[in-house]
Image 1 (cartoon, helix red, strand yellow):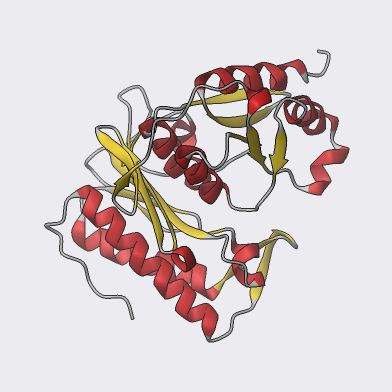
Image 2 (image 1 turned 180 degrees about the vertical axis):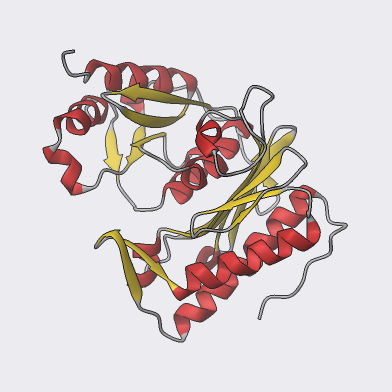
Length: 281
């Protein structure tokens, strides 16, 4: 059972402790057997471990950071007064998790609400897509790998600094991506995705956006792009990529928002390729 955390921990220390315990809790629950509940598709599922880990995260943050807001994938919500919001993904890559793969993680980001954003709660969260995260963390339990980084926080893996991302063009690097098979029959998604997918040296599709983005920050993946990313799938990795010297963008094409991350040159190239897939007006 996960233990209560010390409220005096710094944000960095708290983020690391939260994810290590939440990820371990989910892994222990999987070891005792789990079934998945379908959400939007057969590959979009939720388990009792997702819900239990998020409930624990919510409880700890309410104790340790009572003035901060909270927004979680499985419905966790708290309207704070500080202007800061913790964005939570207790199990990112649930299909992988349920299938017995090790390629899943627990992830979180701490995001400051910009002065231009309307309202003070977490119910109007559209601003989160473009907000600059203060801190991001990703923990992959079965590898015992914890990535951490943010504004003024160097990108690290298990406390070891990551080298700066090399500014390579897309043609010289790999790209991580994801697109649900159903979207390939939709020209508004298939066109931009295909245009971008033709650029890199090779493609990788692993099924956990936060694991992917942590590896972009680490240099194991060259760049990354995906459409319609909720904030819990985008903000943790976005913080890591920025902390490692990379760049990100959100590109709107055919009514879909595409998140792009990687070296600045590759981000510009992938963004331009996505725009080239725009349908005629």
